Picture 1 (cartoon, helix red, strand yellow):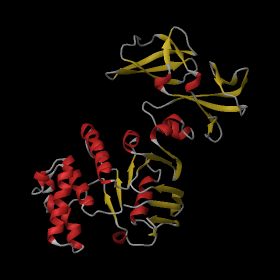
Picture 2 (cartoon, rainbow, N blue to C red):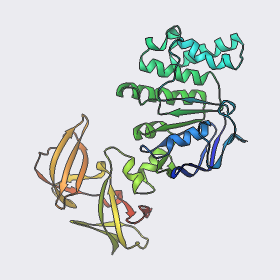
Picture 3 (spheres, one colour):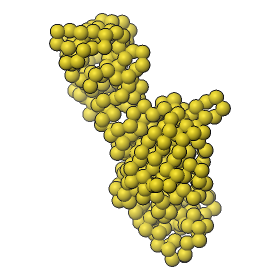
Picture 4 (cartoon, one colour):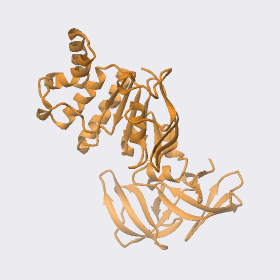
Length: 356
């Protein structure tokens, strides 16, 4: 395996900048997930690495080799697509073996590689079947197996689980994570699903409008988002935002919202002015007293917990993640407490994070 380096990578389509000045290092044996909404540039970035698109500027290194102008077949990478891209007239065995046959590998080596990959993926008894005789999960395993037999320097995955049902996606997430550990593979994985990103990636790289917003370990991104976009994109239910003004107080900073104010402990001088306060749904508390009042609009039980949708006096919508035994009723007025040590503050003009 080898590291993958993207250096000042830019891709423009006429007047549209799909990827802008992307710098990203995927270490040897690392699993990095590119995540973002539709149109964020994540798939274009992956296609640039694969050689399916040519960059407008910048360079791509796989190991110590500059592959920016190298054809896809000579980059020593394997790509797994969203739609599997299997030959319908071939068996699973032939689909997995085809790439090696084209490259002139000996029959015995091909057979050994295919059987080893099938054993790893649990499809050893299905190699005689054609794609039409396989389930979605089995077709996905076949596509992954076709990549494994190549023994490339890096694997590229383009939203490979998006066509699977919810329960199978959970199963395949675990299988791909185990596969990464077993092969010690270098993987660059693209998804729009932030749950996939959080559960699979050793690091996640969040993109928006072609630009890298933050790249760090999943929990580091969740606990200290670099800007308002990252805070709003990562987390389900999404973080709650409150607009207001930031100033100073005797104990630190003072955030003044439309119908509440909150002392935030901080020893540094506050950057006074318009700001946005973010509070995760699981950090909010409903009780007899709190930071602000709100009216319950919707209660969503989801098993071990519930999501309580609230409407504040000034019309803001707030979601609280609460224990399943919380007793509230629709149209009931409740008090909501915001723990000062759990909030995130962002500049109103740039969206950048304020403070530690």
